[in-house]
Length: 220
Image (cartoon, rainbow, N blue to C red; front, side):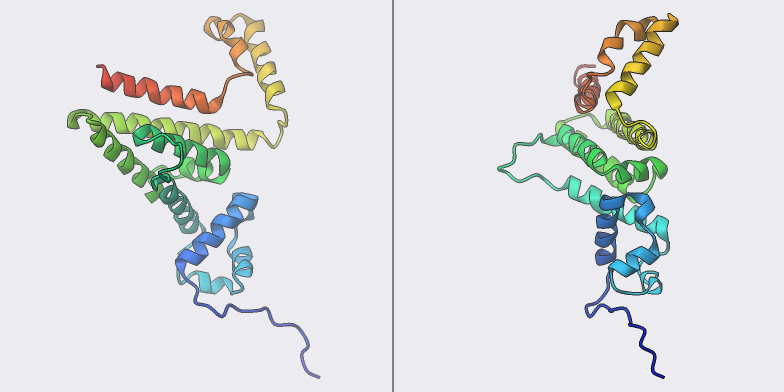
């Protein structure tokens, strides 16, 4: 009796690392890191899991390549008709938007701080500082502090993503945190600024950090 089990459709076009990485990015954007496995990715590309290993060594390699591709798009200059900040501040704000809108990028950057995506970010920050006229003897320290600013936010975003599994109301959570701080009397500074907890804008606070760093280097 003939076997009537349907055979999965196969790709008629050539499989490449770029196609694999782009498909992985789409899956990560849709479902986060938990959604990405070689089996599910292979099914999306209409191929077998074994075919993927000709282009990427393992899942960690794939995640690093996906993050690197996203960072490459961040580094592209915005269109001339787009109202966007230029220079190092513009790069930093675009990175913030990337890790905010794509939580898996924050997770990836925080998990592997010396992967190509981070090295390229470090290099781009230094290049922008050089173009800004920052002296060579100050470029390394300044670029390092700006990089740590990004990685710190990425780590916080990753922690926030995990917290979101149990906390659904951000305002209520921050308000309870404020109450916990003010009720004990152990944190005088935090008590004074507690009213800002729930209403602060994360993006503007990130921008303020950049401004403080650049002000320090522009006016030593």
